[in-house]
Image (cartoon, rainbow, N blue to C red; front, side, top):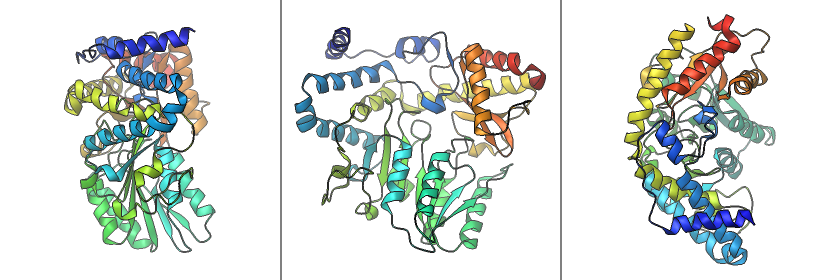
Length: 417
């Protein structure tokens, strides 16, 4: 009974005049616009982010519509709701409306493309040493289930002194490995926060007849996107990391020359020529995150757009990075400034006794900090070392990073001092 009352109150709220947002970022913004636990410190927005109340309210409205009349929702309303949201998101990211669909997350998008394409003996898929594990696993699945198909790996070695260094590494791979059919390039690498010069890398691949799939999981909401101008064959990116949507919601852009090849992972419709219509609905499930993505786009616009967010996040990240490096006597990932993601950076951690340099080791570091100090961090492994992947977003304050500093020094003081 209380659930129905809660949802009803939300819908009443939504019928009133739109909630006014005063974009004074930091603690005031967090308290007014988010539902985050005030006793927990969030320094890892790059993982699961946080959903603004305005978007939560929008999602709840769609859920209420669904539950008050499920038959009407699934038969007559949900497709229109998803389609309207898709139009708004396409406008936001410079995509022709016919070339973009919404899916649950970047992992779904990557699998959708890889399992829609045909691979033959001798074909190769190019990834890098910083490719996200789920995407790497999807590429390996294709190779393991298609005889003669191979995954080749481009090494990203530190330091990276210029954009050209990455472009040259890609050129070397293309020259050395004949038969590359698809190159999977990150826009911003998840483990390391490196902003790839995709504007130079994509044409290089196309000159050699290689298709390009860009993993933009961290890009929407961090960098300006014009998907038609980027020119990738396929591009996907989460809206629920840096672009305020409910989880899970991701864009999937398909160049029109490939639209006939791409189908959703779940086959629901056949002989459906329009790309969007093939993706609108795959059975009975919760589509409210997709439907409420319009509210996420609107929220970003209401708080001043990406320029206002950058004006807060970038100085905050720089200040926090300098403060932590000084406190811990350490350095950041050695890459050229032009390759640094706007809102994420790696800070080197020392070798920590009794913690192996493995995925479980990374989890152990993050878990220990959370359990003892209620601070969320990301510990990642790059080039044989542990690193702190630091995030800054509109709800963060300097106090968050002081707490992070003190938490790690309390637990790992001998290594950090």
